[in-house]
Structures are given as C-alpha cells and as structure tokens.
Image (tube, rainbow, N blue to C red; front, side, top):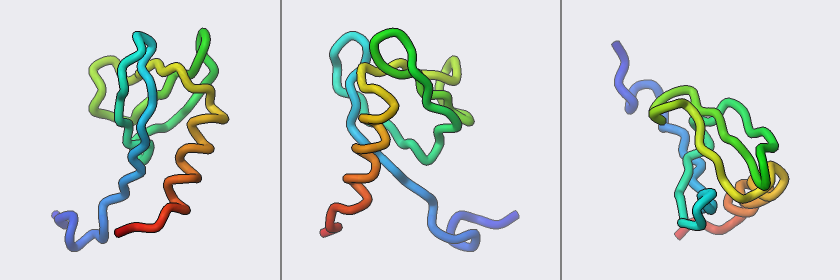
Length: 77
C-alpha cells in the first residue's frame, strides 16, 4: 500500500462558502463530485467524508467555480 508521500501530493482546493443558515463554511472541492443548483444556492455532492454525502450552500454553481478559479490564480506565500 502506498502512502500519500509515495503517491504524490494530496490535492486540496479549499474555498470559503456560506451555509444555508448564513455561517461561513470551508469546503475542499477536491473531494466534490457534483455541484448542482438547489433552492437559492447549490448542493455539493462529495465522494466521502460528509455524513449524508452533500452540503447545501448559498452560492450558485457559477459563483463557486469563480471562487475556485480565483483561488488558483492567487499567489501562494
């Protein structure tokens, strides 16, 4: 069995979103399989690790992808 070091770097794509009740929530989109329109925001489906496999957020799918794209362009310090 290979460890994370031997397999290469673990992918991480963290962004800050807003839960349906208005709280900040940090989400690693590297573990997401689908983002769909849901109510007044989005439902994010995960491969594993979330109790029911989904979370609902206030941002639209387009806003989520824009935040992800902005984060990839930001310089790392």
